[in-house]
Image (cartoon, rainbow, N blue to C red; front, side):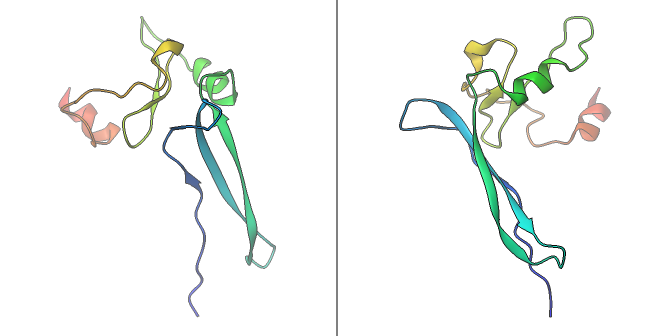
Length: 106
């Protein structure tokens, strides 16, 4: 019998009924026998200080560079300029290419 596993998920960013920009993240829970027993999840409020902001803002920056995080819809989830969070990135010729592929273009 082939095993089936539930995967971790992250929603696209959305505005909650309370007006907060959030993403929902979930992770499946398995017992010691690798049987699925449930799921744990929670919302990350993107326009408030949170673990994502702490982690990314501690990223090493070199000569004016910065890090940002966008979801699969190109919506900014983290940006050092907090007013940009929630914006959608414009078109890019590198969209969808891996970091390795981008390095070859340089």
